[in-house]
Every structure is written in structure tokens, then in C-alpha cells.
Amino acid sequence: MSTSHEARYIIPARYRRMENMHIVFWLLKDISWCMIWRELGIAMFIPTLTISIIIAWRTRQMASELAHNLAITFWICANGYWMISEFFNFAEGKVWNEFTGKHMALIPFIIGALILLYYYAVQRPAEIRKNKTATM
Image (cartoon, rainbow, N blue to C red; front, side, top):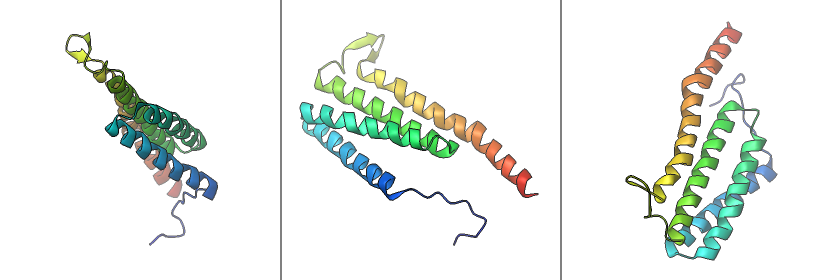
């Protein structure tokens, strides 16, 4: 049960519809990857990534939403790169020492994780302190 002083996050219906379509594109991309349907997988990667960027941009005023949406955007980049590396047979090629083409997807995965780490280790505690100070 929410109280009257609890913050609310309200999303316009048109934004919510876009987020729902984002999920459809993402699922189609991953199904295409699983079935090795190159053209459809790559075609679905483009709107999946584009909508992710739009969602992150629209939530840029809310630190929590922005951090999570940026992490998702980097996750989609990593996931799309990994898919493409498998489609075009460079996933197993050596890049450096034991790192393969597929391992290069770690770069955007780690960037997304670092964004969330920064949010939870730095920004969120500062928000909590600020809210406690404001309510005293």
C-alpha cells in the first residue's frame, strides 16, 4: 500500500507501448539468433537497440531509471555483438591470448555493470542521504 508521501513514477501510455514493442523486438532478435536466422536477427537488433537508447534518453532526469536503462542499452549492444560474432563465424577466433571474438562482448557487458555499480555505490546512497536530510 502506498502512502501519500511516496514518490510515484508514472509513464505515459505511448511510452509504455514503445517499451512493450521493445520486448517484442528483443524476443524476435533472440529467437532469430537461436534459429540462426541472420537477416531477421540483425534486422531486429536495430529497433531493439534504437528503442533502448530512446528509453534511456527519455528517463535521463531520473538517476535510477537512467542507470538501469543505460545498463540495458549496453547489454543489448553486447548481446547483439555476440549474436553477430556467431552469425559471421568470428566468435571463436582468437583476439588476444585466450580472448575470442565472443569475449569482446564483455566490454559493453562490463560497462553496463559499472554504470549500475556506480549508481548503487555512489548515487543511490547520496539520494537516500538527501531525502533523509530533506524530511528532518
